[in-house]
Figure 1: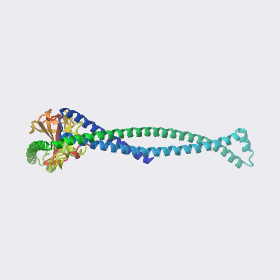
Figure 2: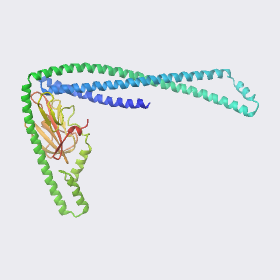
Figure 3: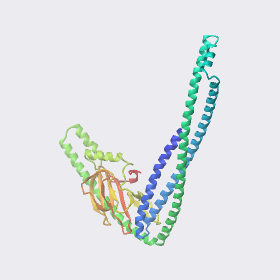
Figure 4: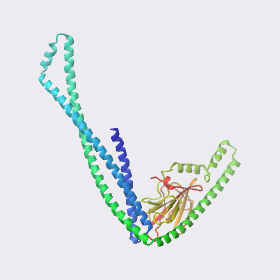
Length: 407
């Protein structure tokens, strides 16, 4: 039973993963459907196709794992049914034997005659106890048969459900394999088209990277300015506190804040600690988003000899999708990027989050925001692609957002 419990837990985990993978594939399909209207082939579309293929392969592996677990569970359940059937057969045989014995000694007079024919009181008592225990044993056997029969019915029903689930999963696996074959063909077709225009795409990519580099410089400058501003405020508060206060308790509070670079007030410190405590649990800055470029330096997935440096993540979205704050904080900077789209930086005490490529912004500089609050909508480029760039900073140090966002 413990093995069945463990496998049921594993299957439940796989079912949740399966639901998440199916959602991601649906999100990709929605985005590809929107961009396909432009009739243009892009490296971004190829990335999305590769991402979908990868997710589809993971989904097939997930379904296969669930099928194997169910196969094992079905085998265990079938063995349990066979054991119960043998136990019930043995109990029925024992009970039938008791009934035959009771039939031969069915009258109360036979029992009393047998008891009173004893040679002494001790023997009579033993015969009396025998008949009483015999009746109890008879009743117990019947109850055991009824209980085992109920267990058998439950196990039989479980087996039918598991077999039905197995059939569903096998059908889903075949369907996804067929979809995967189509997606592989579509990817190869797109890749061929891109290779024919590789020089053109390289030129476009260089232009895009140049704009990205300028945007990154804007972000770096904005963050550096915010840090300087907060450090100056912290220094002024510390000086004022030192001048006005002589209490040990207040002095220790000022000393505590020195470990923070840009958080000087107790509220900022508490917010920083709360942000850090939610590492790995922050919500994504958007719904139905697909990560197409991850943090760090890595080669371009489709164009040889090109390196991509990413201080955050790039997320593809449906057209005009809402962008949300990942945590409570204060809007500290709103500015225009190199491509004319808007950018927002939100400070969360010691931490800062950056949201770029917004068509519209629904917050103001200095405004306090709450977790999941809509701060704007994503813009779309000439190819009909909607994509935001998202970063997380701790002071001067950029972080890997994938380590902070909820999976």
